[in-house]
Length: 62
Image (tube, rainbow, N blue to C red; front, side):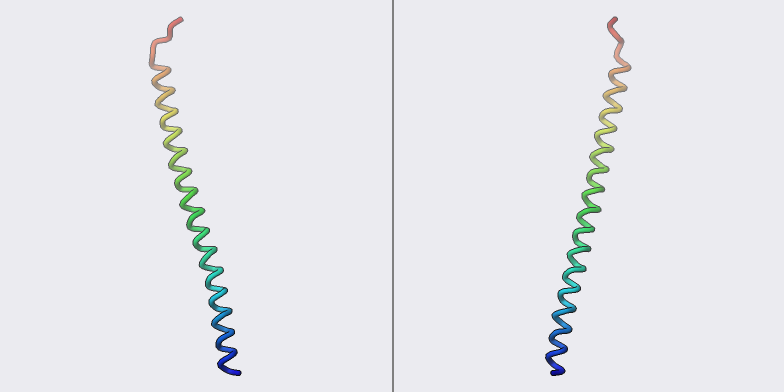
């Protein structure tokens, strides 16, 4: 009986740790995705800003 309860405890612990581990992995992937998105947005905004500067610097043909 005692061995059986230890076995159940380990199964419960494994399931709990596995679930927690999955949550942590998903959270890390989510944060990495957000960081990559922020980098891409910064890159895009920088390109757009320089493009606008080039446009405004060029003499306007009226």
